[in-house]
Length: 466
Ligand code: BGP
Image 1: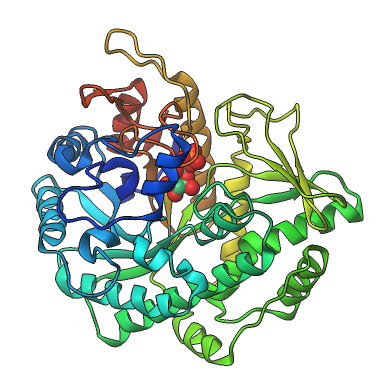
Image 2: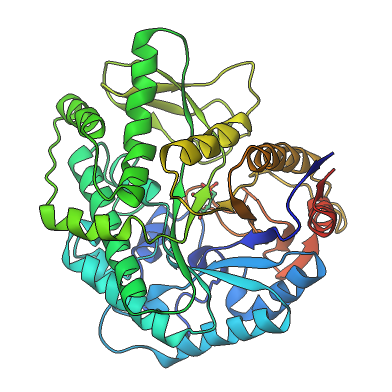
C-alpha cells in the first residue's frame, strides 16, 4: 500500500471567480470575464457555487472531511475595484472573515493573488502586455501582504502559461485572440517579471510567511523515436515548461531556450525582446522562492507538424473532438493505449512522476513543492443525493500513487490540493465539467459529499492510498 508523509497537507483548491458568484456584490469591480461570458451566453458566473455566502459551510466541510488546506484566490477587483486607487473595505472584510473561519476549523489557507481575473480597468489596458500593470500587480500584492497577516502561504500567479495561451493562442479566454506568439511570449515574460518583483518586495520587507508561484506543467513526450517528433516535444516543452522554470529558478533564459524561442518565432512570424533590467529582478528572485506550486492534470504526446495552425478546443466533453496542430511546433496526438477523459485529457500518472524527478534534477535549489491542482473533470451522476464517482477515485489513486513514488525517490512535496473542493464552473467548459469532492446543486446551493470525499477523508486521516 502506498503512503504519503505524516505531516502532508491534503487540501482542496478553489479560485475566486469560479466559486464566489456575487460578481456585482460587495463593491467588487468588473473583470473582462463578465462581458466575455455574457456575450457567449453559454453560462453565467453568478451565482456559481455562491462561495461568497456559503464559505462557512464549505470550510466546515473541509474540517469534517480531512481537508487540512484550502487553496483560494483573492479577487483583485474586490480589493481594488479598478485595479489601483482606493481599496474597497467590504472586499477586505470578506477575506478577513474567510481566514477567520479557516482558523476556527483548523484549515490552512493557501492564497493566490491572481487567478485569471485582472480587474477590467487594467485588462482593457492590455493586461500584462502593458508593463505598467506589472507595478499595479506588485502594489496590490504588497497591500495584501500588509493587510492579511493571517496568511502564511502566498502564490503570486496561477498558471502563467494558460493565461498567455488561452488569451492569445486558443482565444478561449478574453480578449479571444488566436495564434499571436509575439503576445504569448511577451505575456509569459512580463508575468514572470511581475512575479519576481513581488517576491523581491515580499522578502525585502521581511513579511512573515512563504511565497511561490503556481505553474501549470503538462509533461511533453515525443510520440515516436524519430528525431522530428523528439524535436517537436522539445519545442512544446521549451515554451510551456522550461521558459517558466528557467525564469523562476535561474532568473534568465539559457541559450538553448532562446534558440527554441527563435525557431518558434520564425515559424509563427513572431518577435520578442527581453530587457536586461528584467533579468536583474528575476535573478534576485530566483533563489527566494519558498515553494513551487504545480498544477498537473495530464500530459501530451507530440508529433512534428508543419502546416496551417489548427486548434479546436473541446469545451463540451464530446470525446475525440480536440485538435491541436501548431505550425513549426507540434501536433498533439491521442493514443489508444492511454485512457482519456471526455475532454480528451490523457490519464497518465507517469507524467507527474517524470515532471517531479526532472525538477529535482534540473533545479536542485527548488526547496519544496506543493501540488496545487490535480483532479478529474467528470459528468457526475446524481441519484437521490448519492454520487458514486469511481472513475474520479481511480484517477486520484493513480496520481497520488505517482506522487508517493516521487517522494519516495527524493522529491520534497509537502502537500496536495485536489481540484476542486466543491463543484464550480470551468472557465471554458461551464458547469457540466465537475471536479468537486462535494457535489453542488446549483439551484439550491446545497452540498453533497461524493464517494470520493469519503475516500479522500480516509486517505488524509491514514496517509495511506487505498
Ligand atoms: C486550471 C485552473 C483552474 C481550473 C482547472 C480545471 O487550469 O487553474 O481554474 O479551471 O484548470 O480546468 P478546466 O476548468 O479547464 O477543466
